[in-house]
Figure 1 (cartoon, rainbow over the protein chains, first blue to last red):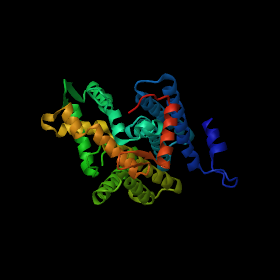
Figure 2 (figure 1 turned 135 degrees about the vertical axis):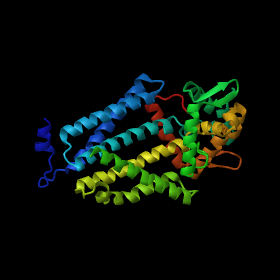
Figure 3 (figure 1 turned 90 degrees about the vertical axis):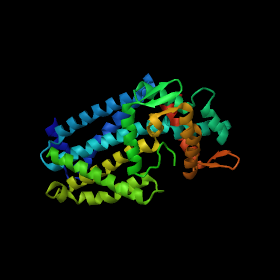
Figure 4 (figure 1 turned 180 degrees about the vertical axis):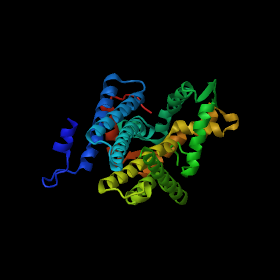
Length: 194
Length: 167
């Protein structure tokens, strides 16, 4: 099957104007990305998992393995160019999966996306103070912290006793890495605040 | 061959990260994402023609194309990496705790340093800079065409994935 692909159909045929091999090889991640989107959408739409990123990660890894197997079946690794083509395909596929994943969390589920969603769908919130009050709420925690603090405690990043939060060693490592990124890339204090 | 490839990937990624850090240090008010895209695109042709340096021999045109695309993909990963420290509320909370005495803060102190008022104020300013909204002196917010398109896209995306509660 694979040799038929290589010799009969996929080989370059300049006279017939058939697309070049590198372009054909780049169609592999396109297929992977389409399958990733279909699987992710189906999972989130039908099953509404509490933590979709576990599924996204699983699908992305499985599709990477599948892409590597298909690539090696169609284009055996004989030259450095073949190996580079495989790495390129895998990186492009992973990048596109990560982009979809990030868009899902940052735009659809994230803070700025939520702000614009509220402004677009609720005219009463189109005022700075009213918008801020809607996020502050009436409880002990505002809408932003109420979602994040329980996850940080559950994940072992921080401890929470009564109204005091304390950084745990695992959280300190992450915080030091983040602080280093602030300095190295001149990001100010991050957190979406300029 | 695998080791050589791994070293090439590390070199390509590291060179872009160093360039982005240098440019960001020189343009402190610049947008880091624009810097990353600029560095990746401007250096991709250099990567394509650094084949002899990276592999010890010239690559054929296909190999050069893959090398340039690999370089661009690594720039994409740097872009995604940057969203973590730059945008993440969770990571900022961890940093505030790290910088606090005894690495501990009361809820009140945390919200005084990095609270919802600061976060929303800053993001609204960014939406205004991005020409998505205008904010009048009395605090009234009006969506501009770009903001309406953004709002429509987020609403459609949430409906598509049946997201009912967020942020």
